[in-house]
Each structure stands twice: as C-alpha cells, then as structure tokens.
Length: 272
Image (cartoon, one colour):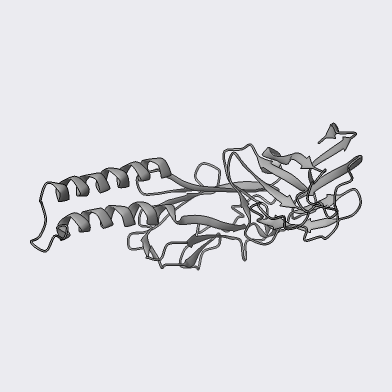
C-alpha cells in the first residue's frame, strides 16, 4: 500500500467510525466502541509501520565480502514484522527472503550481510553489491515495493545540478543564494559524503545518511536566510556564487564528477 492508498484507507476508517458514532453506536458514556477503535488502530499501525522500513545504507566494500552488507532501519515507534519480505540486490536471483518471525524493533537497524555466518545473510562467498553502483529493492510479503536505494556511478546519472540561484537579495551576504540538486530517476540515491564545489573553491559536503528521493530536488543555501526551509547550507556570511560568471561541481563520495553547471551573464553556458 503506497502513501496515497494508506491515506485513503485511514480517511475511510475515520469516516466509518464518525458515521457509526453519529448514528448512536456508542457506549452510554458516549465513547466510541472499543472494537471500532481496535480495527482502526490495527490497520493504521500496519500501514504506517510498513512505510517506516527503509534501506538505510549499502556497504559495497570495494570487492571484499568481509563487511559487505545492507542496513535497514525501522523509523516507527513500534516493532515491525518482516516475515516474508524480500531484499533484492538488483539482479535476478540476488534475493534475501526474511524468515518467519523476523521482527525489527522500533527505532532500530538490521543488517543483511553477503557472507554466510550471520543471522541475516545472502549466504554468498562472492560480492553481491557492485562497487561502481547498484540498487537495493525492498518488497513486503505481498510483493509491494516498499523502498529503493541507489548509489554510485552510473546509477547516479539521474542526479545533476539543475539550477544555481546566484543573485541573492538578502543583503550583502546573499544568504538566500542556493545550488539545486535534482534526481530525475525512479529510485532514491544515497548522496552521503557527496561534495559541491564552486569555481572559487567554496566547498560543501553532505552529511552521512542523506538520500535524494525519486523525482525530487534539494537546495544547498549560502547561509541561513529567514523565511526559507533550510536543510543544507554552506553556513557562510558572504556570497558563494559570483553574479557575473561561475561554475558549480558535484562529486560523489569517491570523488567522481557527477555533474557541473557553468553560467555567464545570466545564461547557462555548459552543463555536464
């Protein structure tokens, strides 16, 4: 069940309970029947908890299988049953099926290793995750895709510098300048430790565990301008981007160039 379907189910359940209550189906005290609430919360917790399971990080380990693994996380405040869920490593046959009774505790992580000898393992002596780039797909027991996470080149080719707002209006510091990074792909991309450089040498490094969601973008501001939602910032008191001409560069965590954008006199001259 995706987010829209979950919202529809919860709205329908809420309407059903409201209608029953209005029709007089209640205890003498005026409270809604507990069976109705049980039904509501059972479905609500199931829907919301399953959406809280995410692929946190893929450790490809440069061809070494010793510590190669993928980490899942449960963001929900309740345990989630993973029985029958499936983790696919991008290729046919590279699957891990969770055994009955597998539960991930609330606010906890769970690691699936490549090598045998671990509680959760692909039982493979060969690398599962491609060093140059790969994608993890996580399915629930009904086969519904719950999450994806990509990393590396060429899977990061859908990520690029989509804009540079170089002429800020927030005083001399131009704190409202920003560079915009976009993901046009259908999977989330791990951009942990990726770097942004300006032609003038200013540098920004994304912190660990940052993912750029499918069909979305993020902005890295020069400072902390008021009136904006600022998730990432160079934290500078002076402008980063030259108003006349400048170039932005985006590198992945292995220092491979992912994208660039050169502008001059208000026009994009080059993008790569």
